[in-house]
Length: 439
Image (cartoon, rainbow, N blue to C red; front, side):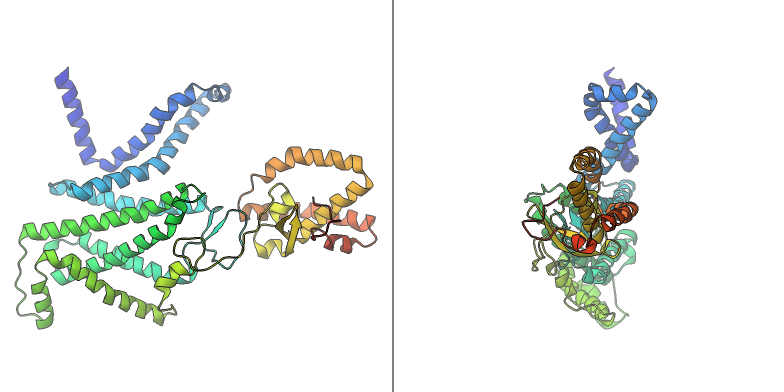
């Protein structure tokens, strides 16, 4: 029996070494099912939902926990895998290729997941909106100045190009000067990742809890690990391969540099020194296309709410999400057309014409038919409030604004029929006066 278990273990280990990515994906789907599945199955909620459609409920149960593992657990497993290979790289060439596959998979999947995380956390971190714009509730401005996007993208591409050259081209086909230049390009990418981690780290210790920022830090953290592992591997391969070449007969200057660079121990330091002229060349070329020379610095300082920020953003507007028209006023400005700031219960809010008309209509109903108003208010509090609390994005607010348009016209007609000066009543809504009863 013991021999049989050893055989099974050996086969599983061979499968893991030959197909590490598939094994990690499978385990990340399986672990949440094993750990959280029994808790879910022992509860009453699952079995109540399963009475009508057991197969559908069970399938949703499996897919839900599997997706949870792929979104939250898999990035951490890949991070741990890259950390292990940073200090313990396989000696066999075929397994080293598997490590490269894991690196590429990490970068590609990390890019997709970072985009998903950024979209998911849009109500907390409003990417693409600079510090000088007014936001709502707990939203934060973008951690990177939008005007420096081209600079950061180009520098990131230089880092990716350096990694691609070192990772894909065999060492015996590259002169040392090319190797060191590629390392210098990777250093530019590493520098961006480090600055991003510093910039975003403010959320790891504040009242947001840090989960959002941590997930957004996984990709740059892995990029740093992969870059360090690539540089370390290439230095070791050069030393083990004894690539002492003769560069005579070529350009004397390049031949001299290549000959001096044959000692791989100096590569990290020389690459660091070469990084600065490479950065200067990149900034000079970008300046020809309209980028400011100091965009590399302004990308992080022309922001607010973050670690390296030097700007103070206008205070956020506290948006009361208990009212559909109030939520709708928080949509995109070109559509909802905000008029001014208003006050309700001592808190500032965005006021547009639709909101003023809705509040003026309710005011008239309360004055003319108070009993009907109480019933209407009870109905809205019962059914309208739960709906309004589900609206958490500007696009959803735009939809609500458009849906409320026919009601706005109806409210406006009632106001014009019941009030001698309807526009005066509409204009007085949400002004900071004691006699203006907040709604």
